Image (cartoon, rainbow, N blue to C red; front, top):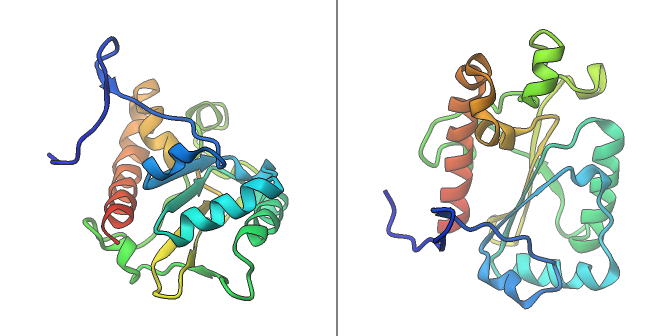
Length: 192
């Protein structure tokens, strides 16, 4: 249970979700952003400064569900426009990092694929074979060591809670660790 106010849709009786452009003033109503498939992203010049300002003022961005070297390189180039790597390097997150211990003690982030891929490929989780065999959890921190950008690469943590009703075995395997990470990330983002 939380005392955090949540906006609900009266018709659908579920929390509202927003799609917010990086240049929209409403961005500052969202202390936590999540983006998926950033391996194909292109951040426009006017979005670069808006996202930088948002992150440096305390915003948090979690990017998830992008697979392989090509997708990583594209993302790294684009986020480098926002947070130059000389000043804001990307670093690997270890199991000892506070974000991995916020509520649940996590030793690693599991490789989670979408349920359709998993079912069609007899439980295989690496969507790009050897090019995505290893999960990477990385971060960009501000000068106070607060994580501004969390990156879960070669995994789709979001599907562990978005698609859990589609297959009971998939849900049994992937939802518990996915929810644990999601809760840790949310708590970290909202309290740091």
